[in-house]
Amino acid sequence: MNISQLFQSYQDLSGQQMNQINEYVAQALLHVVHIHIMSVTPSLVLTLCCRNNHTCNFYNEMMSILFRGWGIAPLQIVTVEQGMLRKFIPGRRHYNLIFTDSYAAFAEIEVEAYSKEYNYNEYYYIFLQARDRLLLSEMHRIFEHCWRHQLINCNVQVQRANGDILLYTYLPFGPESCADTTPQLINRYNGSHMLNPQLFPRKLNNFFGCPLRAGLLHLPPYI
Image 1 (cartoon, one colour):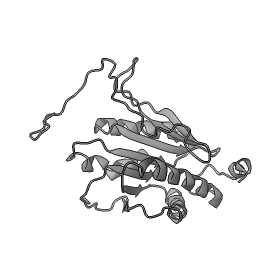
Image 2 (image 1 turned 90 degrees about the horizontal axis):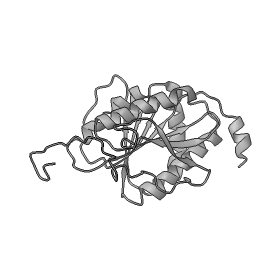
Image 3 (image 1 turned 180 degrees about the vertical axis):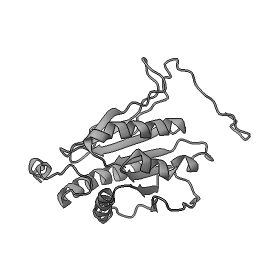
Image 4 (image 1 turned 90 degrees about the vertical axis):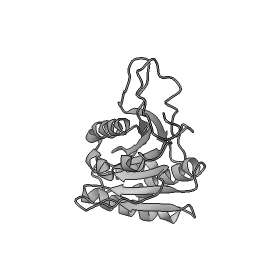
């Protein structure tokens, strides 16, 4: 595959990419699922919520490509539509793959509703498809949402107009700041694999003297 020629065909409008670009993105996601996620969990939940019809069409096309190489890994698919009455779907959502096109759409999923009853860290791999000029601001709002609801393991994958597939997260504790939700670039896809083998960086090894908030529960482990 000639990547240079491939990227020249890219249009900076979600959902109007050529099929080869869709396959490139799908291969990146398959790599993440098969190499990183399925190595630590037997199943995951895929949630789709988008506001833009072009983006929804893009995700539908990409998922058809994605599932051709999915294999036998168990998968639960949840679709959240704007304005529709949502039903709570019981069950654990330990590892999550989320397709969205804005913070507003992401917030509609209400991921926090499924985490409040469990005493473990969930993992969220979010594919945000949006125009380049909106990516950082939308990511920042997503990370603020994650931090506000004590969701520490939130990663956002984006695809820039030049075709680059980049991975961001937030690092709340650092030597210069506390509760920091600024998007931080941590990884990129090179066409065959992620350059950094660690998909979700450890964030709780050092609190750098930041104040902490504890939640008291009425059942063990209580804190």
